[in-house]
Length: 75
Length: 198
Figure 1 (cartoon, rainbow over the protein chains, first blue to last red):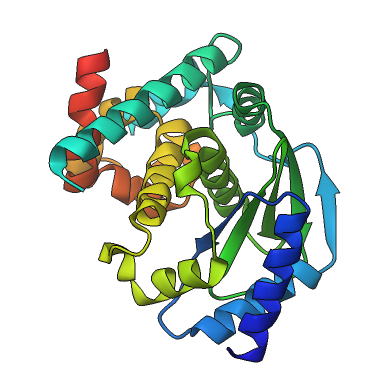
Figure 2: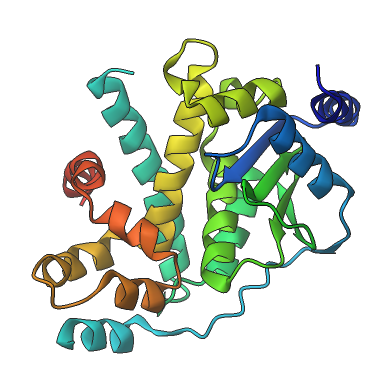
């Protein structure tokens, strides 16, 4: 197994011992990637700095549907 | 998966997302959909506390990741994502929490990666992984661009009176998923179930 893929497997095994049940990815462009490169990116995510919050930062402006929908339908 | 099995899965999914939307709409009916409210309902329904991590990483291949533990989950996304992508990535990962059964959990990430890259989902290695990805995307569309709005906007879109971009901007989701939602395959899969459940 290649180094980044091995590193990912080792991390996953450790995380399972800590109670990890499942892991999923939201992927985008996979046309030029390989298992080793993808694993490298996963390892990068694992080791990167991050801001953690219990609230999702959904910073978008919302309006009553009763206002927005008629506007869209009138276009 | 046979057509009957697929219909059964989609019926189960739409029943679940409809429950979430009904509970949500009792308190707010806004556009774009209030994802924070949806997340709170998913946390309650799955007894899972969700943590969000906005990371400084950048990847062409990965937009987000879900880590699921017994009573908590972590959703990670890149800080470079725009609000539309951040909302869709987060909602899709929340849908895994809401919809996946234990047999859909990833046992080996390397096998999953090989399947994602190679498009080998049709093999018999882990067919549940394909179903899980497929259903989570449908779930995210159902929650962020609900049928009751889709059905009102579809004719306008088909008659070229409104663009994908305008709709995507209003609902704050990537236009790619508005296109999927208005596509023949998605409509054929979901519309009969919505009509049956209406």
